[in-house]
Length: 322
Ligand code: DGY
Image (cartoon, rainbow, N blue to C red; front, side):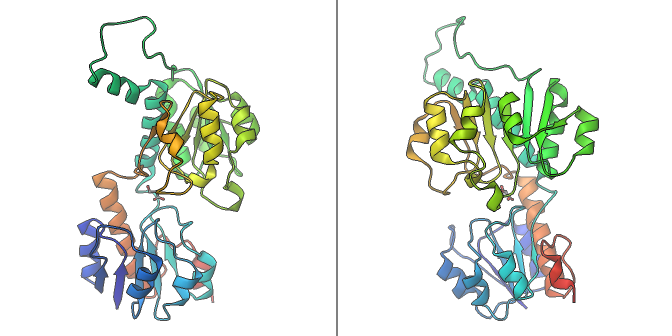
């Protein structure tokens, strides 16, 4: 069996793979083009890929030997799951191990925007601090505010639970009732528009599917408080980026903390000029510990799939129903 790995992942994952299979790892320190992925896949049984790799029907059907796809991410909107399922190929992701890490990034962004941490850092390092001043760098309190959580799966729930120390009112939007959140932080399930109107901080934790594409557009941004902060660590296209730029420029909201962008790695140029947005390079899961666990998890899923077993984190288990 041979696995094509589209980009070098932490060594622990490669070592796990090496014990069971042959592998070819992208030798470059860059993402591969679709054609390079197709070329690399030829004759391979396994594909270990990243969220930046477009694994569409063309890629999947170009590899008749392919038996297993392990995505090195929890989100798998980069893969055409229906095409994989039609070809009987299990697909896996890397949930749980990055839950707290991603939730922590959402909080880091929330604090950075609310307390103007990046602006303050730049101002101070530029030598502009000439003494304490009553009106210098005024931001927003976090404690005792209303937190709006859009999507309360694993990461949204962890994010909301971490509000415990800040005595916040928690609102959430999800298809399902989240009993643990309701019990542990007194969270209240409300429709999205209600959440947008009432929340001081709105954080997105939804997967990117048709129904969540541009979930937040001009109309929704106008519903938010002018003191509100928007946090997105989910997927860029959930928020219409051009509309967000307008909202930030016109100060319909106080600020935004972003880890993801609508057309990654491109970013709306005017977003880069704004001081009321704090930006990260899609690095919410980027800690040594978590990336190592993701690598081992992806490798274990791959090995199970190639051995004909159902991978622990299979996202299309219907391929195993005969
Ligand atoms: C994921 O795994 O989907 C995250 O976006 C990685 O940061």
